[in-house]
Image 1 (tube, rainbow, N blue to C red):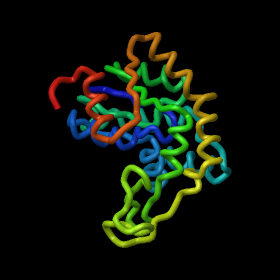
Image 2 (cartoon, rainbow, N blue to C red):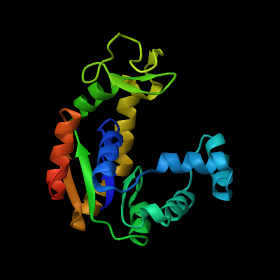
Image 3 (cartoon, rainbow, N blue to C red):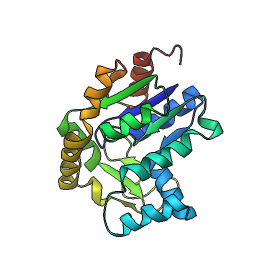
Length: 212
C-alpha cells in the first residue's frame, strides 16, 4: 500500500497513520520526523534546512522533496508506505508523482468546530510525550500522565486561536491537493469523527483492503 494522508490539523492523521502502518506492514513516514532527523544528523540537506528554520522561514520545496526522495528509496519503503505531512502543495504532489505510483490519497475530514474541540482538548505529558484528550482519552488522574506521572500540558499550537489559524493555512495552501487527487481518481474520503477504532474500521473499509 502506497498511501498519502491528507486532512486539516487535528483530524487524527498521525493516530491513523500508526494503525495503518501496522495493518499494512509498511512504514509510517512523517516528513516532520525526516526533517528533524536530517537536522540532528547534520546531513548536507539538514544543514541547509536548519538555516531556514533558524531564520523562522519555511524549508523550501526542493529540500523537502529531496529528503522525501531519499527516504522512499530506503529498503523498508519499497513495498509501500503511509506518507504523513507530504505533499503540502500541488508542486510537491507533482514531484511525488515522479517518484512513485500511489494507490490512494486518503482524506480525513471533520467539521471545523469539531477540529477546534478535538485539538483544544488535547494534552501531552511534558516528560514522556504521551498524548491524552480531555473528552476522548482522559487521564485517570486529572493533569497527570497515566504512564509516568508527569505533568500534562497544552501545546501552544493546540490553543483555540492557534488552531483556527492553522486550519485557515490548511484551507489556503493544502486543500487544493484534494482537487488534485480527486482529478486523478486517487482520493478516498473518510469522516474522522468518532472513536479511534471506529475511524480505523471506516478507513479500512473505504480503502477496500480486505479483512482487519
